[in-house]
Image 1 (cartoon, one colour):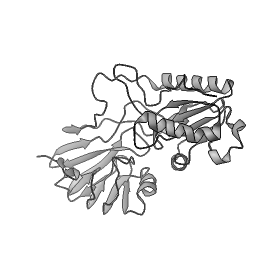
Image 2 (cartoon, rainbow, N blue to C red; image 1 turned 45 degrees about the horizontal axis):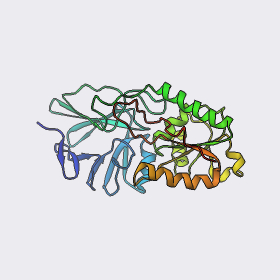
Image 3 (spheres, rainbow, N blue to C red; image 1 turned 120 degrees about the vertical axis):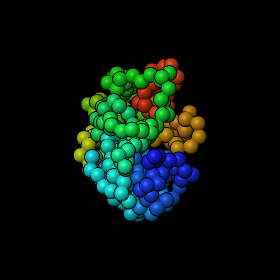
Image 4 (spheres, rainbow, N blue to C red; image 1 turned 180 degrees about the vertical axis):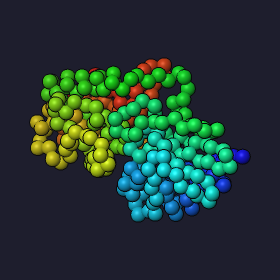
Length: 286
């Protein structure tokens, strides 16, 4: 008995008549998290973790939404559904589906290393586990988070001592907040792009501790950026290098002298990739 099947609309539970992270509008969508490749507009009803709800409301607008806590169970047309921590971003969840003594779990995006800003991943016992596998091949190796953050802080500190602003490109939901939670705010001021700061506010309202941030418009002249870390999202379309270049040009007008790096999540094969690795040590310009 297949509890979850693949359809043109996305993953579907026929016994419960609901979809998980549907690609197209459906009657009932169970959403694992708020990234745009998992949460899409147009469905009649949404179900997600309670911490994910404000993200969906901001991104999808006025929608009909029901929430659950982790481990809380509801029945949808006789199918038991519960959400369990995925460790990906705030409110991210694995979807556990149970019917007729069979248990299936759809992972959504997840990571197994705790990041300090989302509930840590919890293995869920099941008969069938449907996993996201973007970086599932064994050729990918991920450095421990504490090593990466030590590199980020060292890069920022080096730039600050030289009077350069540090510009880090990171996805507005998840990567930016993970970065914020682990940088050393004693190095200098932290400036958040206008697309990042509203998500920071949601994290803070949900009880996640993040250091104070300022908007670019709140900085008084280029001198104020001399020791700053600026966090901005990459442009959503186009090659990463072109996206970063376009954003650098925009920020440069405000920040002046700066060094840029990317934390957007790109990986390299047989290296030591990490979602928040600086790659622009040699890219400072005057």
